[in-house]
Length: 351
Ligand code: PMP
Image (tube, rainbow, N blue to C red; front, side):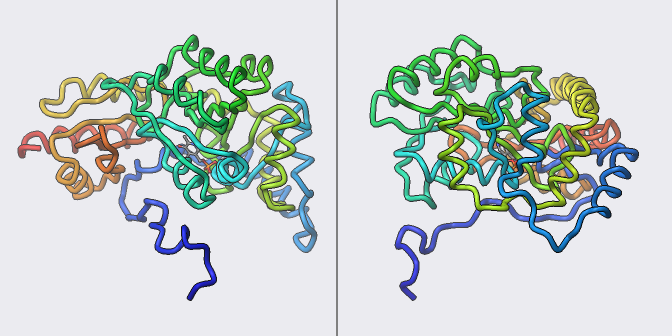
């Protein structure tokens, strides 16, 4: 069969495999569903919808509310059913894609499916931002640089001055710097002031993490109206489902819960991190997200050992520089205790 473009034939699929487990700490989700009163209100809103009707063309209703809440121009907001789709749009629109290695894999995957030239610059030994390497790479033909801030999958937070240096270079060389703020509520950072002052900077955000809405699929881009107009054309018309919009409008009536929960998660993250410092063979890295990257002597054995004790985490050892590493989401205190108990029990049997 020759119907497909050659670069898409035989392309490996997104690296995720579903595994059932009692304690699920593998996808950096919120461990909690919506507060019950909000969920009830969302259900009422869903019941009042006419399901036979298309949603808004480009999620105008949600964008109006976001514009007001975030003090961002309506024309500069693009909604997508998950920020993944917006990443794909950006990669499709751009001359080339640049990111760090390691980085959230959907940047590279999106470049690949769009046949957009792709380059990555390795992080430092302790996951420092490779500023010189990135500035150098931006001397070439302008494209889009994806940078998760805080960083995924390492959890590191780069200094603001370094991010600003990238933003200045973006202006000088005509690049678009996309700061992926998927985890920003857990670090307490917010790059809106930089993006507002600099049209070569855009922000990508998701409802999948701090908001506890991974299942409803929603993310958005905050950009200049010019950038947003291009990206909007790459998101399908009527692309944000009516039920997703209804749920977003409900949570945006009472957005405070997301930040409160993120702050509680950050405290739990510190507790788990401190506890892991006592582990005889595992090394946890400092994190500013809702997950911890942990280096073990043998990722396959540690993964299987945890799973055997009912705890599902994510292997990261396929990335260069992350040999032996696992990524563990911060769950409820009870889930985190179960993870720690399993981690220390493994130490006793030689892992
Ligand atoms: N960016 C980063 C850094 C992520 O970790 C994720 C999800 N794991 C996403 C974007 C995609 O989020 P979603 O498509 O659920 O909005």
